[in-house]
Length: 536
Image 1 (cartoon, helix red, strand yellow):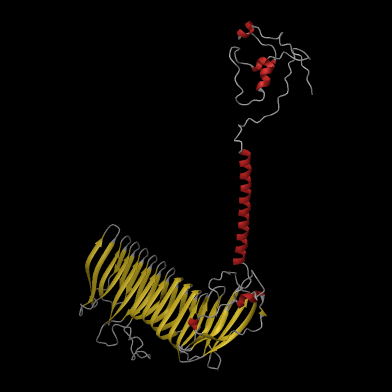
Image 2 (cartoon, helix red, strand yellow):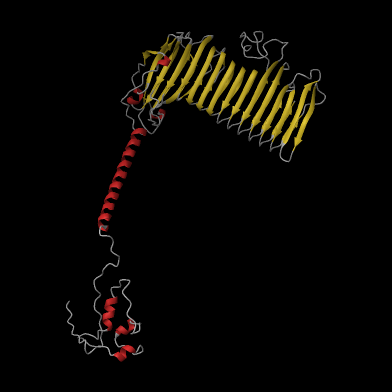
């Protein structure tokens, strides 16, 4: 659109009188936009207002061809950015930054995709390793027979170890061992599988130890990553079955492979050493009959799995039971000179232990049981309770037990009636209660007892034959003592007692009237909890 304007600047020039008077009225619409005095210069267009120049022109514009009294404004000029101009290479820098940002994003997304693929491969892929199954270690001897698997049989869905994958198949293999070997063993090392091993009494008349292995798997490649073989170590007289897989394997599929082992022992009077060392199998020792066979040594080690002994177990030298993550429980009687039991994460429960020396430890679990001891008993737990019933007995000999010299080698007192033996018992828990009950104590035995807890309640109850120095105390809790009757054969004598606002300590003696010098000791202490001491 073209606007034809005819402006006579000479006829509309402002007069000096009108410009000097600030009160003279201005005609036209421009007067509404001008509030500055005539003598003052108009402010500069600092903010970049596109209408400022237009308004200043309209103040001096009298009109157009339509009429002088109609002052129509011109259209505003084209918009121009008011942002200050940057350096000469700002656009180039901005483009380079955008390119770098795009490259970084592409690299990040690529790395994320690669990481997802690697995680999927490591944790979820089920293909067999190209390296295959490992060769048995030389420490277990040499393989004398490899596993010969039966034809795979698909198992019903109700018996699948996991419903995440399927179908599952089952195959079996068998081995025979010589029961007269110096050591019979089962070793299962590595990862990528789970299951259990059962020790049972053989019903076969062959007289051999029969070991049956069942493998339940989802893919044949998973089963073949595990080596199973009969192992012989003729130099040491050892014979057993080995199960091996890669230790650094990271295939942790739920229910990938299950190994079930049945170790059938023929009915015999005695065996030498039975050694079980498994990483990821639970262990169950069934009732092996009555009378139970006698082992020279019984050792069971499990890394991840429960360990149960359902029947009686007798070992003439030692019983060693270790577990990493799982409970240890023995329902029958354990008869041995030396018991060593340790569990890192799980409870330890013994129904009946007859031993000269017994050490029982649980890192994160409780310790419970009944113990017949003749030399030393140590019960310890870091973060669990201790509840024990103890029978303090004299050292056994061939006159009292059918096993000649069974306990005399580890007892300090021996079997002489003239020499008074000593038995040491301690029950210590860092963060749990301690309950120590002495159901009976041989009068010919001097007992040294110690019960302690850092934060828990401590309760000790002694039999009516106990004599010794007594030290009881608590830093914060309450101390309760029940003394024996005064009319008995023993004398109660308080040596020292201090009772503060929040603590209580007591030292006393309990001795026989006819033999005051024969003394044992009893200590019960808790830093924060209460202490109860009962002397029957």
